[in-house]
Length: 64
Image 1 (tube, one colour):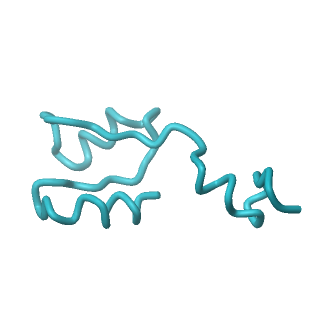
Image 2 (cartoon, rainbow, N blue to C red):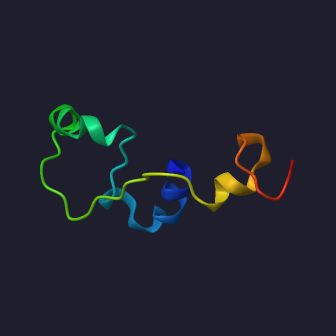
């Protein structure tokens, strides 16, 4: 999903910074990256339709 976000937001160039991590370690991530002010934060908090479409992930409701 991070790769899809990068593709969809590519037009914003360096205005967007991508960090892969857990929201549980948000404070540590901000300390490590030096980022302390944000205009917006996008979190992936669960499953989406892509997970259900891919039978190999074990979530599909359309395929065995």
